Image 1: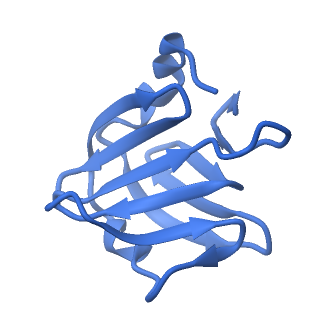
Image 2: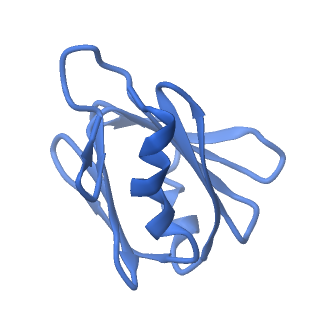
Amino acid sequence: GLKPTDIDALKPLLRAEITQICVGPSDLQFNFHPSGNVTVQGRCELIDSAGQVVDVWEDNTHSGMFRFPELLMTPVSDVVIDSPKSFVLQFANGMALRVIDNSEQYESFSVGNLYV
């Protein structure tokens, strides 16, 4: 899970832009410019400006059309830890990426040197 002090590991993503999304057999990676990386092995949700979940990646499966590229080249406008199990990257276009720790046994995500 996440501790409130883990926000320090997430803050470098503020104002960064996703320049690449990589899909692997067991992970989804978001690479940022000028620097930063979020690797998801667990669950992440793409949330539209109305607060609706429009796509989900979980354990190499996703719902519907793959919409995560809508985040490309859009600056991160806010970073929050919204629960002990998740954080949200809010983007300037109104979209949000929620990354969730969905496993008690295995690593669910990493951000830089933070592994959860």
